[in-house]
Length: 510
Image (cartoon, rainbow, N blue to C red; front, top):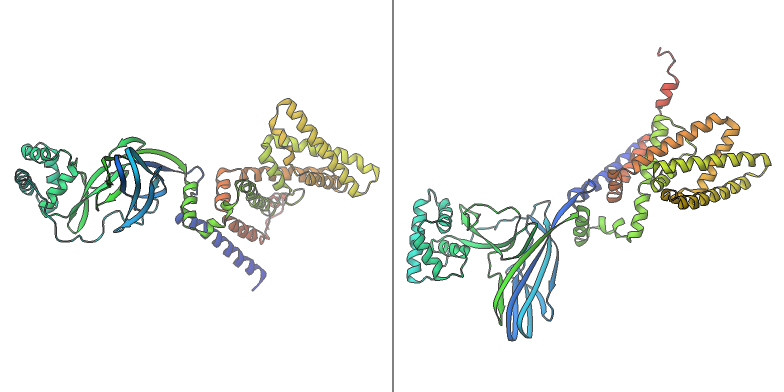
């Protein structure tokens, strides 16, 4: 295999690996490709209140489980003086608080953060066919008569068996058969409309259970849990709103408990209740992706720049931009044909421009190089060795930079205080090199190389300070493998440069 083919193969591998790792982080770890991407996060707090008698007391709360629409980011429990434990009962997590000696008003708290799931790979509907046997509820004589009357009316109104639940809920929420509905509700005023509908469905032989949850919004305070009805119809589960008889899961509804026993059980206390408060926040999407990836112990994130201290991350944030500047230099030198003073001197200048801002950096650079060349021209007449000349120029550059910094501070020009970010040794060497070029090739070549270096440095600065480039290089450093592959491909170019077309513009095409 020839060296050219080896370079093509290596470049292809590097580009594919870089793009593959980037797409993996985007599609599977959900890292945002665009800067400024945010996701909504809801903070949900459940407050349990009850009066404890002067004996042992325990509270048992059903906890939400993973579901397709949302992702639980964090959970916290506040239970001062209580023993706390989480147990699983028939696949449902339940939080248990216990205290042997407590009395009076008690408050327990459970809070979590939840965000919409990007990939809904977990089903949100109950799976499997329920048991065929339905336990009939227990009624008083008058209640049973009213219940049967409501069920009969709903069956008459339903055009198909699938419409029975809809008609039943309409009767409960409307004025039809008001006497029968009143008799049912007045017998037990504490029963919710969802529980009443559940009893009627059980009397009619329908499989159903209650879904308890929270309606996510911008801000809610001390709201009771919302209740929906889930009914098995036509070999599938359907969700109904018992208040409006509408079908389907409402928007922004977070399911807390699907079926199962009660939401809250308190032993050794009275007047227990649970209330929910919700507050929405907007958080950078990258922070959420990082948190979830770390919880899953993803090696691509665990052994990445994110694992470094923040101070080191800020250093690498600048270093990761250097390959972008190198790519710009390669394009300008190989494709366009711009001559520069030193191959990658423009990249270092561009890094300095990032700290000083562009126009301030250009002014400082021109002044430093101009004064350095003037001093170097004087030193060249003294017949000093090259090492001595460069050392002298380096010291003078340092003195000039210190003087500029002090003067700018007195004048209130803060941008000039970033002069220390200019690479002093490289500046001194550049001044020496330009001086030698001046002596050997004349001032025209110095002007060409100097202006070329400045043009390439400005182009590199614009590329390196682009918000999208900064975001991609820091959050997807794997892309730098692709940049390396592109540079290797550009290195194989042997055709005319763009400026050479202008140079040979007068040649006959024949």
